[in-house]
Image 1: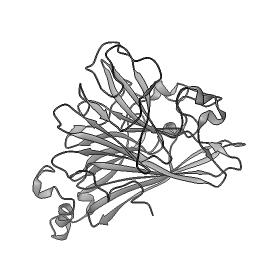
Image 2 (image 1 turned 90 degrees about the vertical axis):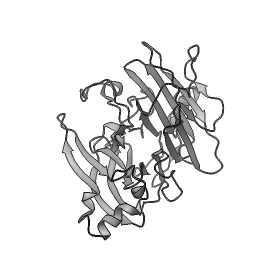
Image 3 (image 1 turned 90 degrees about the horizontal axis):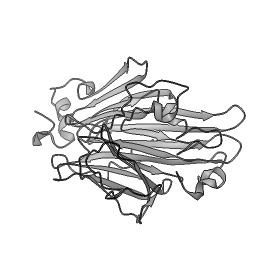
Image 4 (image 1 turned 60 degrees about the vertical axis):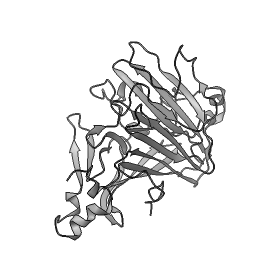
Amino acid sequence: MSAADPRLSAEAEWTSLLDEGMVTLPEALASIDEAVRPSGDRVLVLRLAGGLSLDVLLDRGLDLGAAWWAGVPLAWRSPHRVDPGPGRGWEDRFLGGLLATCGPDNIGPAREGSGQHGTHHLTPAADVRWWHERTAHGIDVHVRGVIGHTRLYGTRLVVEREVVTGTGRPSVVVNDIVRNEGDEPRGVPLLYHINVGAPMLRPGSRLLVDADEPLLREPCPPGREPLVVPPPERGAAAVVAEHRVRTSGTSARAVLTAPGGSGRLAVEWDAAVLPRLFTWNWPARGAWVLGIEPASAPMFGPERDQPGAGAPVLEPGQEWRTGVRIGVETGVVSPLDERDTLAAHRD
């Protein structure tokens, strides 16, 4: 049977293989393998029956690398073959992947001693552990660790991250607790840089989001729209825009649709901590990508001239709970539902 077989479309069907003695161990349906890339980077490779194949990057703040669903890659890969390592800028070291977290010291251009997009994506996680959990819906895989952002005589910010995915559903949840363990208030800019490429991304793909009129970083080239992806074109410029999302509560949502309606990628986030959405629409031939980027702070504009670059302030001892959820909606798998929400899996 395949994941597309309707007899295994419900998540609980996968655990029936365990219950009926056809499978001995949960690892047969939800494998977790630690690998070391030729570059030396440590990676957890997750493979879930009826779910995602996903790389969790241990040396990059438990961000998400390659991601596949039903044999189809979801994440964009940058043109860089390898990370040249320390001493080069963020853009030179950016390999793409499904999620690259920016902050918590800076997002956007370098500012006041903090490099472009901050330190999280290039910081190894500590105290990392992973485990299986049997639930009423299937087998979940949890990866948890701590990413520290500290200066000896200054900032002491900590991000406790948990990545959760499971059998029978093409979605992953990233739950973060951001805590100020220092003695001074700190502005905390945070941005979840979600990168979608072909073949999930197609010419004419459109991002659906309930938002006000976009604010553009630079004027839009003729014939371009921030939320519509044109065909690849040599030398095409990137369009970066901010969208103030309208919500009825604290949950915000953006859905990427492709012509023909063959599949949709949905991104959900906590708008109480991440009230802004940025998009990075770069349709250049050979570097064709759409970035979907919920954020806590401005990435451009006059607000960045304010103290802390306009980021909300985290007081000493205070913490925020936030995160994102990324999933594929298709006709084979049930749409993403209420039980698989942000923070649903936290202790």
